[in-house]
Image (tube, rainbow, N blue to C red; front, top):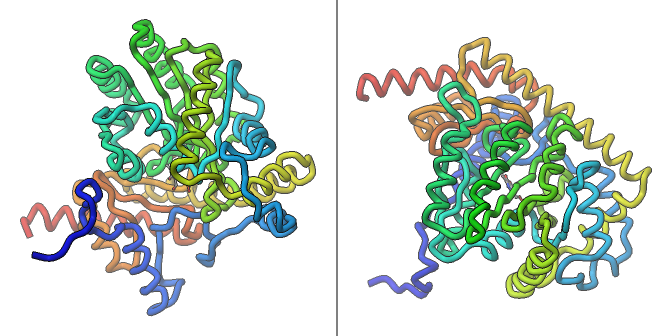
Length: 421
Ligand SMILES: Cc1ncc(COP(=O)(O)O)c(C=O)c1O
């Protein structure tokens, strides 16, 4: 018998992360045949047209100008006070909801998801998110004995499927005290969908309806990891004001991240922000989260906190940062436009894209399609129900030719399947 040491609850399937694996293969191909001949649509970070990681000057100049002590010293467990203020400002802009809004620092948006799911669900609980979703939601929650249930994100006309959302929401509320829902919007990963203001109204009306039963606890976790790359900076934040004056048993937690908006992926900085009409619920949030911080990672990256605070505090720095970010956003929008246009032209069905880093193509055999694409030196991530193409990492020129290559691969795999090969 082979020796095993790991505890039972820590035995997971020994599979390599599929995204990193494909990304390695893409890089190998780039070395072998040259970058111009490879389309690497696997990476979830903003890359320039030459395939180099974009790092914002305003962010890194600020970071490098910090005194050593601003990077080196321990930070407060809940995050530095000026950071927490800066997070609220940059997150909500003009749409700060009324009520008690309290933030606790976390290592990235991932840390915020951990804080929220750990502190607001019980062991064995089902959490709800859409059927197209960022897979670490499962890793983060299954590690602590929770399960992810899904509703169908789109109906047959590719509209937001509120009917399915409602069915699942009510199913969970009929059997559980807690209904914890993760909504990744705007600029959803992997589809690029953004929930509209009208759809938010429906979601909130349903939450209020269920909240009439005072034994129920409704938690809406809004994952805004990509908000800074939504086309309309202000428009995409309007929904925040809808969180004012909700019933006391409806709690909103926003998952803020510096990874994308500040090209600070490796700095691991974010925050969980609660919005509630109850002072007690806000205070409870704070103490529960600070306990988790202490118990898991202690304090967060002080240098990253300082840089955000300094940029947000200073009007001129904020302006320069915003201009730099908007320039990159412009680049992303052009890539998205050309991909969507070409997809339509060649008849490649894609999911409704509105904002963000990714476009998804629904298909029956994602693994085979992804593998078939590699023969044309195109790399895209196979998901359960389709393929994810990272426009954030691929030049406009390549975004123009990718849809027809994907269409061909899809058709080829389908024809092989129908021949039963
Ligand atoms: C949907 C979604 N949420 C949250 C995150 C969290 O990112 P981080 O932990 O780097 O802030 C990511 C990162 O890829 C993401 O795609």
